[in-house]
Length: 308
Image (tube, rainbow, N blue to C red; front, side):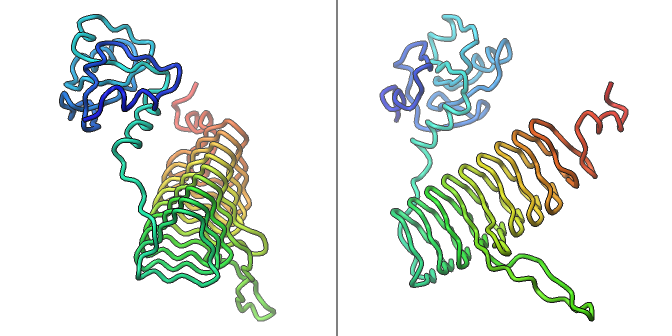
């Protein structure tokens, strides 16, 4: 069972505990509807809707927004943790207390090149193949992955099962008889710190330069990233997306499920690309695009008769 002492150091200085601290007693994390009195939960809403949810949940420990008016009736039975970012504080607490820590070591079935270089606290799962590459500290490589030559992986990187990094990209040139010949792919892949890559994802090596995934990028399952793609820090690439050769994704950009980005397209910072979009043109910073072909959200809505 966890108590106030277990979580007080996991919140920021602006977070406030109100209610009876003795009510902080929990042994599980749940959503609002499934919670019992020994659960910790979070509420994303504010105002009357949040007040109602806090009143109705059985949980006695609730992380919620700091702009909710809470009366004594609630606080007699519960302890509320008030913060500007309840989802983040909940995430931090649950990850620390309930998420199992990574294993370390190399599974006996893994195949490791003698010239591969590892940092500290690395885990290599069953049947994974690690060629001549570099892995930083605290890396977790799940089962059946293949990491090819010339891949550099930073610290705190997690890679899901059956993912391939550094394989040949898809590029060809034709001779005078129109016969296809593979264009050389002799670049590498550089992956920064704090990157997460899901299962069954493929990241191709660069052709003459590198494919680059920068710090903090999160890549979902079943994503294809082609040669020479650059993804700037803290962007998210969601399932079934395809990033074609030499395209560039800016910082903090959201690529929704099943998006296809054409080769050489540049997408700016803080962009949202909607589900299923086919991106054929560059997108400036701070815009939302959707559709096939993708266009600014305002234009898309007008074309559907929904805009003003």
